[in-house]
Image 1 (cartoon, rainbow, N blue to C red):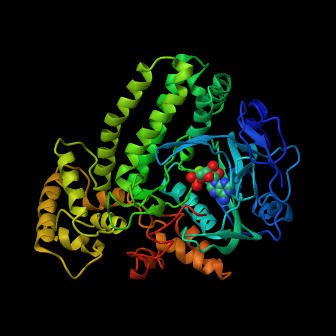
Image 2: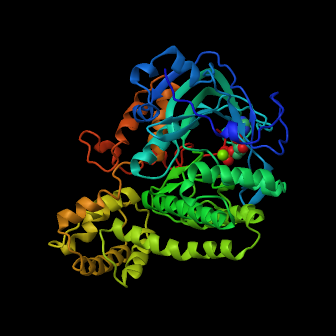
Image 3: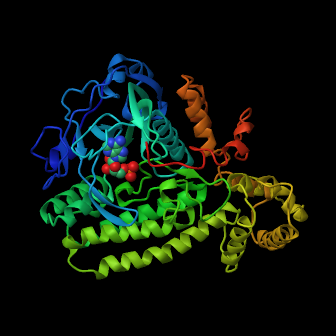
Length: 520
Ligand code: AMP
Ligand code: MG
């Protein structure tokens, strides 16, 4: 196995001088060196062929003992020095102090085809940032992270990637529902890949500690490697940097809203400086279109991270990043201007994204109202988001009366359709048909375009759970089936219609399907 190793993070940034592995506060440093914990009986369960290729590895490489050992933390690549990053974060709105890579260990960075990739193991043992926890991950959460990060990539959503999913062979104790019933589960390790795993929290912790020199070093490092087009560091460059980070995160959240992804734990330690979806925990996919939905039971009271609130939270998190960058800039005006642009920019981009979902590719001043009415209607009765938009593409100008019929498959309750519901939709379809007359596409052309924006297949919560339940019994075939299905989320796939279906009734209130905790 030959990787083109080119470390920068652990070479260019200040390291924690202590190399023993015990829990501590780490100051004046960006990371601590740490070795992954060896596991009893590692077993690779799945490998992403696309990521192998991105790293310059072959399928044969992935079948070697070396591959298995390296990507489960049992063997360290020569000339590499694994490490855990130091970061802090706001959790559910409150500053939580130092967090850091408690169960992630960065192995190395490689460059292939001029692209830099950092390789990280999740679940390979304790680090100085593990606090009171064990540094491990269980199979269910690892399957969810593995499948979802690759699925998100194929949906066109900026995300960290995953290379491999493995069993560690070690049991892991978890109280899944936090109700005093801990049980042993299978331990697992995902190797995940991204240009960088830097989070808002990496900058915040330095600012909070008033460690401006290290903050400057880290920001300069980030610009040099990931925002190189901004040029030499200066106050103006730092502002431009913040602007870019804001734009990238705005872009990301618009995609989330487009595909119905709800992250579930948008704490500032889970916000990527590159605007990537990062840290797949108690995330979920909208089934019924509901602004108030959150998959995370830990958040069920305030629903801070509910679907409809995600863009606001991105902005809230950007305020925290602005605070962290302030010491390098020394004045608030520029930062405030960028933050206030976010709102206007969001409105515009959201509107365009929603236009495209319903097949409008030009702008009209009444579109905002049309889309608002659409969203109101989608909330009238539980309506499956994915099926709704997919079916909407079948609506034709020739058959304008057929609107309600086209979409009614998306309703969860098909028996009870109130007059109010039918009338609201008929009214909406009237406006929609009028609006469509202003577009140049034929029905077929519009449908084709819409179907490249509205996925047919997403990783519905119950689908991941089916893969998990089978894997718990040693059957990994559903992981492979879903992995392949989700490579082409916008295409019609023969023999896969069964995955284009509403959530089955058994999954409505099942743990893991609609209710997820942070316990992973
Ligand atoms: P999260 O919000 O789940 O991404 O994690 C919040 C913080 O808790 C991060 O610093 C994680 O590294 C840490 N953490 C979560 N689970 C574990 C675990 N099992 N062992 C050690 N640290 C953990
Ligand atoms: Mg996290």
